[in-house]
Amino acid sequence: MWPEALAKIADCSIRNYSIYHKDGYLFAYFEYHGSDFEADMKRMAADPDTQCWWSVCEPLQDPLPTRAEGEWWANMDELFHVD
Image (tube, rainbow, N blue to C red):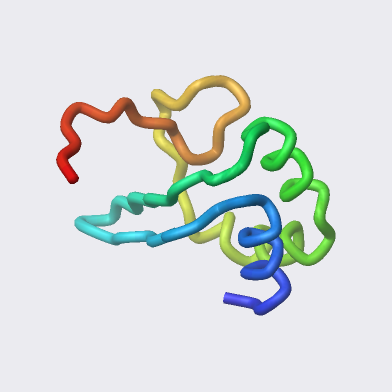
């Protein structure tokens, strides 16, 4: 992961970010600590360094056909949580 892309993730209020792999599927988990998720994600998407990183990664990913329009990573609903 490029340091510039990691810095943009932190700048956009993302913390505790992990990506897992199992049987050809990727699962990402992160905690958002900002106040405007949509605006932060647009800012991240507009970042040239992040766009370069994504251009390397995207050909290696096959998004789920059931994802919502405009999503690359399909959002999931949390079914259970305990602290």
